[in-house]
Amino acid sequence: MPNASLTIRVVVGKYTEGHHAALLLPVFTSGWKSQGVFAEADRISPVKPRDLCASGEIRGEFREFTILHAPPGGTFDRLVLIGAGKESEFCPDRLRSITAKAARTLRRLRCGQMVVVPEAFVGTSPEIVGEAVAEGVMLGLYRFAKMTAEDGKQELPLELVFLAADAPEANAVRRGVVRGQIVSQATIMVRDMANEPGNVCTPVSLARTAQEISKRRGLTCQVFDEKALKKIGMGGILAVGQGSVNPPRLISIKYEGGGKGAPLLALVGKGVTFDSGGISIKPSNGMHQMKYDMSGAAAVLGAMEAIAQLKPKINVLGVAAAAENLPDAGAYKPGDVIKMYGGKYVEVVNTDAEGRMLLADSLVFAIGQGADAVVDIATLTGGCVVALGHIASGVMGNNQWLVDQVIRAGQSCDERAWQLPLFPEYLVQIKSGAADLVNSGGAPASAITAGMFLRQFADAKPWVHLDIAGTAWIEEDTTLYFHKPYLPKRGATGVGVRTLTYLAESLARESQGKKSRLSELLSASREI
Image (cartoon, rainbow, N blue to C red; front, side, top):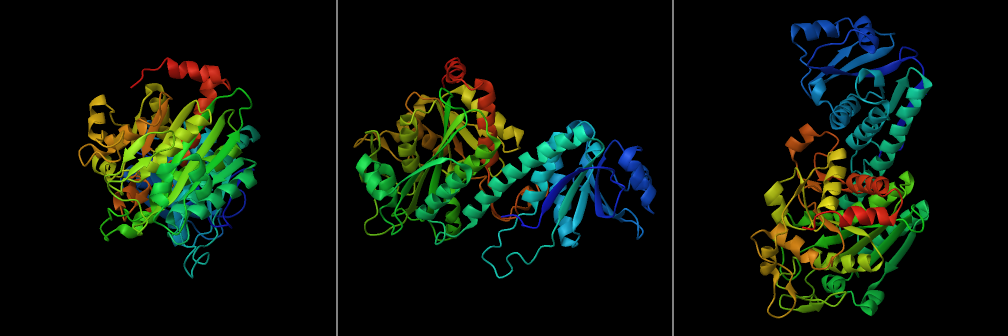
């Protein structure tokens, strides 16, 4: 979780009052501004920023970083000048990025305070400034250190202050800050969960986390243990988990913000708390990272945490299937035929294609609970990493309007997704001679055939699948860290929390709290 001493305050008053450690200002390629807070920076700095810009020493290129020291006893000790690029290209994600970079740099310099003045970001609404900067600071300062002796000791408290000229602007900034804090805290919770080792994060502990969220936020939670799963016939979840001493769980958590008659959005997450590959065992190199194979389930729980606080007028069902995939003597094995929840039979040809077995049961369960639309999220296939790398998640679905809504929700928070096709010909690869389906179509188009497998369990219900295998984890990817400093240098990213949260809010606005309205939008869309 973020440093407990970090505070983000919004105050009404002038930024020249009092003493502050650092002032953050953007520099655009169009040159140095001459009014307001920019003029104040010129006044207090021995080396004038306007002169550095005029000479070309500071060009304003995106992520360019300059620190100027002011004389002792003034309003600010430092001016932090960060290149913001072209004004026409400036967006919330750039603001999120430059704020994260500034916060990290100031922490390294043991500087305990940073001031951001919303008026410096001309053309960006005060509310957006508040949200993006809160996200940048909180996500940028994240470290997973809870299992080291230095936990909580390595950081100097940072206080971030927004100063607004009048009350209406301050209120708008405050709304943005609150929203940014909510989604950032939920994302950080998910990062922590995915970074925890498999001996700490188990199916049972994942269920316990869901129960804690429900109690904290007033949600309804139901957990199915292995006996209950067997009773109702969840063959896929039971098969994956039967090789582990840590038994599987199905988690159902519900938010009812829309009331009776409102549409129900189901969010379904894959929660493999450790994936060895089972009998079809993975290579040992890199297997230790498979603790993050529950990132989809974690993202669903994080989204429920945020949704419960933001209170969109829609009902949301979060479903997380949790299991460990290990090669015990009792583990499921290649050649087994599993009767899935809902009655379909699946021939297992690869026990490392386990995530879709969990999701298939969970999709049928979510639809049985009355969902009007279903979105699943999973670290599902290495094939998606091959196709899209670590920049975008793969997205597939059977309803183009819903696919577009998911992609748009991701774009709003810069969690990008790219649509892959589900042409009917791909179904041939997952047909079985011994059952209805095989659980793996092999290497060709593996991300797509995994999506096609899931489609068979979505029935005719509007459904979208997000494959986050490439975006849920970073392994020393300096390129991503350079472009998006609010992402960690390595480890879990918490991807999906903001996308799913914004999707719920978007569908609430689109449906205006009426199930019939959402049904009309979905039915009018092209089926794919």
